Length: 311
Ligand SMILES: NC(=O)c1ccc[n+]([C@@H]2O[C@H](COP(=O)([O-])OP(=O)(O)OC[C@H]3O[C@@H](n4cnc5c(N)ncnc54)[C@H](OP(=O)(O)O)[C@@H]3O)[C@@H](O)[C@H]2O)c1
Image (cartoon, rainbow, N blue to C red):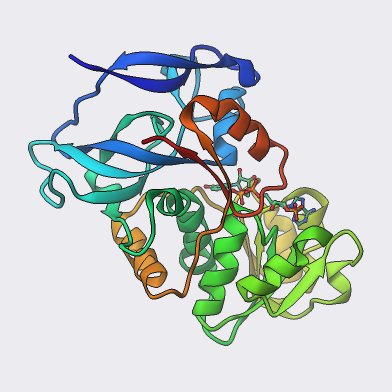
């Protein structure tokens, strides 16, 4: 059986634990699809997993191939996977078993969608995990509707830059916090009010909001309760918000984990095809330089997405 290159960790630690291994090709189970990876994107969850700080990935999953996003071409379909055919261009979140930093990966068929036709694999792979996190946070959990207002903390990172565009496409009023260097970028994404968190306190600008979408946590979260209107909602991708505080301020508050959903990804793909949403690529690295790509994301100031070019 032929071998493929996978960027794997055999132990948890710093970037030096990431190794390029030659591994036998995986085979898809009945409901799965084997994808030949053209591009994989890098997410903060990858360095959390690498360092052993992600609860769902413990020693029993080692050796572990990093990577939760791919765009590529269908190589082989499992016996009961019938939605796609050999040669189709697809993109997807990769399950918690990982595998995106690789020349080939097995993905559940239900997680896949057809790659938007107008963009290449580099741009497509930027979308699934960050895009679906933004979509689910705003709409599934936040219930954001046209005419409502949302403050997005961290509006120019992977999740944030999609959240601004999705909320605008839905007809919401968008406020966002970003650093000085990214004020222009956030405005170009469509944000109505861009708050430079280095020079301004968002509480001085924002009040009576329907939603806070918190991608930052810590003191940013704690200062956010006050800007919500009664009946508003705080949605976080990080730690569980205090229900006591939520009650005190008369709002809902929750933390969630993104879920793969091919139908939802297809809905996002339609917005991309229509030109209403554009993934922004900050930088591309070759697969072999995955450790450098991960170090870049770990610095915590990504503008859009960092992507690995695989094929
Ligand atoms: N629960 C889930 O399922 C889930 C899914 C995806 C992501 N996440 C988590 O959500 C967080 C965001 O993910 P991501 O992919 O968007 O991360 P990312 O691409 O690394 O972006 C982080 C952004 O935060 C900004 N930032 C840093 N400090 C800030 C502050 N004090 N105020 C406002 N912005 C600040 C940075 O911009 P500046 O350079 O402008 O500071 C950067 O753009 C990560 O912690 C990630 O692990 C959770």
